[in-house]
Length: 344
Image 1 (tube, rainbow, N blue to C red):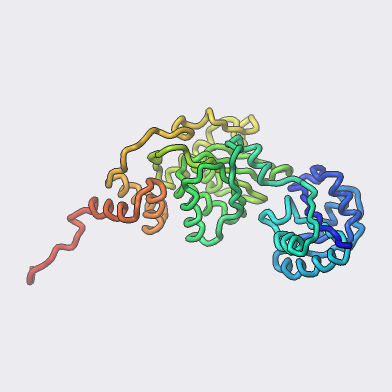
Image 2: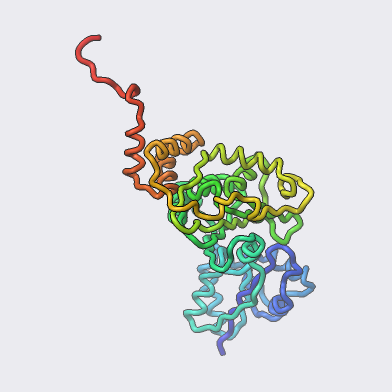
């Protein structure tokens, strides 16, 4: 008789969010395949149950080998519970290869639904959630990350990203360059945990918060509004200006959780300028002077010449040739080298 694979959702912070069924599965499964064996034992203790079966590790580096072994055990009739440290296995966590191997072998796969940082952040964000896309973690390498964001710049659906604390500042800077500082964004940190924070506003403001010298820890989920409908000329601000303006807003706005205001924080759409939420109408094509000024502004903010050009291409929807022509047309003639004929 073939066994079964049970994909188990784990709490993302608060153990009491676990379902009674999860506690039951942990006690009855023949094998518990866990991303971290110590954490699953702590979870069982918090739930007041004892794991009845064998506990084996199943983290990224060993998942391929574990998938083969676990499939053999399920074909022999055993029940395997698959669980990660937080949230759902296989969703930006180990588990995909185990599920795929079990399904390919004809083994029944079922699920114990549980908390998810993705849907939790989306629910509290206040951004449109009827259609959304989950983008997971952005690429670690800067060039690959910027390329991915350029592909997403015109995405109309709300986007959900995960990010590590040590990459947050760089990722937000690239998001500002690709999407514009005024794109609505909500940054959730440590959801359901003691130090939970939900910071609202736009990408420029979130970048200002992250870049003000504070130490950032914990699990981070970023929800970003989709591109506005219709053509729109970006409200361009150099990244440095966006960070300074956003930091000043954080320091002075009452009721913001990061500024120490009296209320629990919650910038709403009413706090955003009208042009943050709706298209400004069909714009005319950008002038060459505007394109050149935008490139210069991004360079002044710290981007390389190549990255500044790419950011302007994404913001204005123009080609590489358009940007190059703008830079040539606005070049100071006096700065060009004049030909010489003989000795001066």
